[in-house]
Length: 165
Image: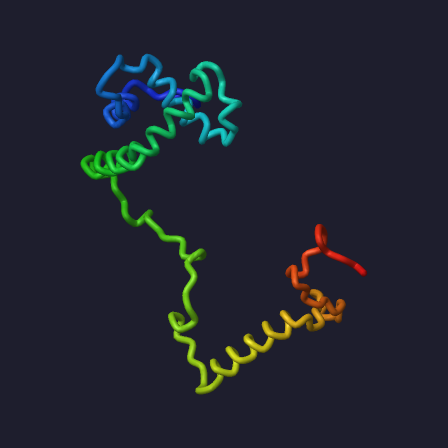
């Protein structure tokens, strides 16, 4: 397989998953359009930079959106997995879950707080928010006093309607 083309065997596997409308002729350049989608995601380029050999970029993009909305790529992935399982090529030891983006509440991690600590933290947070809204002194990143910024009726936004007099 070259960088931009599917072999006939690969195309034979992919083609049945691509929906073709009930009415009208079979799209003439369906294979080139599918290869255009592959090119786009392999290269990371913008749709408009797609080479002409795949057809008009807007046509390929529209075809991609239709396939995405129809669930073609999910069905194709499931078909590849089923084919690999049939051939005995499925190795679940390679499956992993990246949990670095999963957030958990502190209770989920087994953290225990003494009685009254959580209430004290919540009261402190409410007090800090009340002070901030009243125009208390703000601190910068180095924890030095910046300046007192009073809350205005317009939410402290300067510009139209803000008066300095």
